[in-house]
Image 1 (cartoon, rainbow, N blue to C red):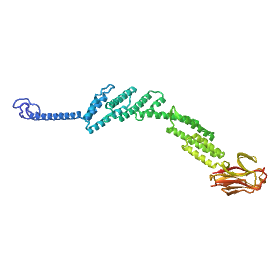
Image 2: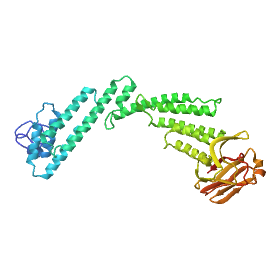
Image 3: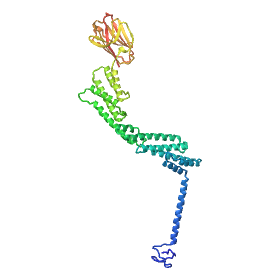
Image 4: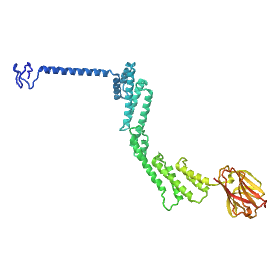
Length: 460
C-alpha cells in the first residue's frame, strides 16, 4: 500500500503512512501507476476526438451529403413562399464538381432517389380532402420549384421525369379525392360511383375494390332472383311454353346488363347465368324440332327464331344451332322449278303455284300436254344426290307414252307405259349430275289431256 502524499510503501492494511503520517485510503495503489493510467485515458480520448473531427470534416465537405442535407431541409421547411437558398447550395455543389463526372453521376442518383421518395410518400392515406390538398400542393410545388430552378438539369430533374411525376401525382390526387368523396356518400350506388374511379396504383385501391366486389355481387344476386322467377317450370307446362319463358329470361338479362349504369355483363356470375339460359334455349329448341311433325322448312324457321334470340354468331350455342339448321337444310329439298331452266319444248310447261289434282293440293309441278315429244332441261350443277316426284293425271289411263329422265344425256329413269302405270312415284340417284332432262315421249293425244310431275324435289 503506497502513500498518496510521499509515495512511501507501507504494510498491508496500514491506516497511516509510516514516514509522513498521512492517513492512507483503503486498497491504495501506486500513484505513479494511476498517473500513467490517467495519461493513457486522456490520450485515447484526444485521439477519438481527432478522428471524429476528421470524419465530421469529411462529411461536411462530402458533395453527396451536402446535396442530401439541403434537399431534406428544403422539403421539410417547404412552404409556398419558401426561399430557394437550399437549392442554391446544391447548385454550388454541382458547379464545384462540374469536371468530376463520377461525383456528378452520384449527385444525379441521389437527387432522383430523394425526389422519387417524396413522390411515393404522397401515396398514403389522408384523414380528409383538406389534408390531401395540402400534401398535393406541397409536392407539386416542390417539383415545380426544383424543375424551374435548375431548368430541367439532368443531374437534378429532367423534363421527361418531371412530366411523368406530374401525371402520376395528378392521377393519384383525383383517385384519392374520389375515395374520400365515396366515404361521404350514404347510398351504396353513389359510393360505387366514386370507388370505381380509384386507380390501381392508389393506396386506397384494395379497400375500394373490396367494396365494389361486394356491391356488384349484391346486384348480380338481385338480378339472378328476378330472372329465375321468369322461368318457374312446372310439370303442366309444355316445351314450347318453357322455351318462350327462356326467351323472356334472355330478354330480361339483356335489358338488365347495366344496373344503375354499372356494366355487370362481364362478371363471371352474369356470364354463367346468361350461358345457362342459352343452353336451355338450345335444349328446348332441339327437343321441339325433333318431336314436331312440321316439314323441314318450318323446322328451319323454328331454329332461326332461336338463333335470332341468341344473336352472337361467335357463341358456342349459336354455332350448335347453326349446325342443326344446316343438317335440316341438307334434308330439306330444293324445288327443281327453282333451278336454272336451260331449255323447254313446245307443249311442256311448269308452275311454282299449287295445283289440285284428284282433290289433293301439290306445291308446284311440271306438265306436258302430250305432244309426241316434250322436254324441259334444268341445270342442277352436281349439288344433289336424289330427285323425287310423282306422275299424276286426271285421266292417266288414256295416256299412251312414257316419262323418261336423263342425267347429262344418260337415261336415269323410264316409266312403264302411262296407261298401265302401277307405281307413279319416282326416286332416282342424281349424284354428280350437272343437267337433268325431264321428257315425255309417246303418241300424240288429245290436247285437253295433261300429265303432271308434281312437287319435283331435289335432295342433297
